[in-house]
Image: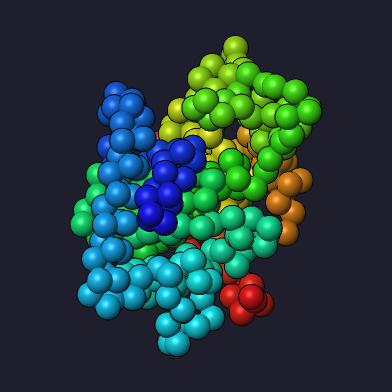
Length: 286
């Protein structure tokens, strides 16, 4: 019964589909149309595997952390996740405000070549483990961006409604994310008049305000100097860059971009090359 209730909770929690391997807009539309059924299928499979694991005496997500990785956040310390992927996720989480990391309740890594490279929402992240480590980290950051946006930054009903909804869920007026959305959007699927493709950090960011937020967040963490360079020439990007500086002031510089701005907007920020070099005190912090 507990598993059934857990499944119901997860499926009732709004989610954002992240980036599939496809890169064309028509294919992305198809992905968007099937995002909820896909998440349901993945979660159903995961829960079924956990039931079988418990019946066979194999540890699942509810067990204590493995002694060899005792310092990891419990939510990522799952024995069905490769150690390197647990460590990558853990080190990214150490960069984030504690009030936000505590909201991640479910973290899954799929090694069966899933259809989507990543899914995420208010409390759940599901990633493909069949990608290079740097891409895995970038995907985790992107999906954690959805958690920040939809879970960590919240408004109150008393502040009033907005034109923004995540599926059927209202985004309230005093939600800090609304300030970010309004830079390029009039509503969840309506860009502001005059918006250009260069107003977004990537092509995928122009899909909707939620992907705009998540892609911009990943770009801010992994390609901050390029973000800043582009912001000098673009008012929309400057406003987005300032939003992250204002609302996430403690997130340090942790990477150096290996990409350069040549005037061509990349499609997918998680595919861009970078070097990962977080401050030593951040790596050691818990």
